[in-house]
Length: 550
Image (cartoon, rainbow, N blue to C red; front, side):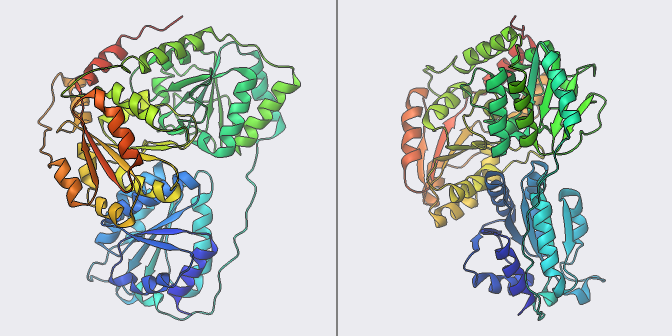
């Protein structure tokens, strides 16, 4: 068979369901082979960056990689932003690029560049196929590395001449392995710390949204009542209605949750990546007693120097800690501080639920109505911008992986392509993307992809006619901001041009009904609201004057 046929068979053998991308001349053999596949669906996108974001969201929702595809040169460079976003946010992904013939890679030649070297900083592993017989080993290795904790992206580059070569090789059979676990000595040491603490608290990070880890975390918290503060990435690891849910931190400003961290005599970090909420913000003097529990050892940082590290499968670690709680007959902690934190945040979340405004709508009101409109298993995707800060603080979740926020690489343009992939994974759930007008326009071309696929999605655009987050940051630091304004299209004409349903909401009283209508329409729907970003600086002022509840 041809090498490109073998590559497709290897991908099928690994359970790959989707490849998103834009083909080119140099991967034509692969596309011809892929067309014959009965197991892999190719989704043609309008830009390679959109393809990468779609593959990222598929990986985040399923725990398995999808492929994103581009040709050599500009096709590969167009992929790189979405690939970097996926890799930093721990999403398994396969990146598939074409390349010129191996006979011209050593010299100046049309569209030739060193794709593998370019992708090495933003992937877990990147390699080119130098001989057709190595394809089974390369695919098996790439998928294993992409899925292994902590997950990420892997690149496979296939030169056009090698793609057409004959080979007699066959795919390698995937074989699973059990993750290592911490030994009983270190588990006992960590439990003794926990048992003697009076005010312990948990910071739950990205690793806690794995299904088994979330279930075991809830079990531990039900037995102990330990409060859980989530990073943006860990939303839904515990139910927002649980008494031990203390909501989110990560705004890079002091917030109510930090009061709980200040009062804690032991902080347990679970599946925590430093990029989510840097420890200098919650451990400024570096003197907190920390238990680090994660799949990998702790990153080295002056503000994060744990005395105890539980390295290995996170679900197993949580299960064994809960077993030790049972064996000792339970643990009694002082919970008044965390109860006060939860009560204060609940008050703030619901403060503007009954707003009645016209001309612009407060972010808090929008997110209250969104939370009411979406069920416990429905999915919200946030783009990057000022709205992300509001979603992080005010939108809470019942289940893991029901609010996806880019938080490591933080790339704008994520949510529109991402919500298309979310609908492919969960066609029976309501899926909603929230974008700023700046971020939405960065991948606006994928509106055509959504229409072509008949995607049942809703995109809610917060319109302020500017790069609002940059204005917020500059205003906070310098007392003013540079010119960040831009023009927008006629949104309803734009929706009509792409065959979408279109809605423009001018007052807060009509938002809930319009949102409900859009979420139940067949096909893609666009809802645009004028947002009141005067609230940005008001929030900054309030956070700067937080008085911790007792």
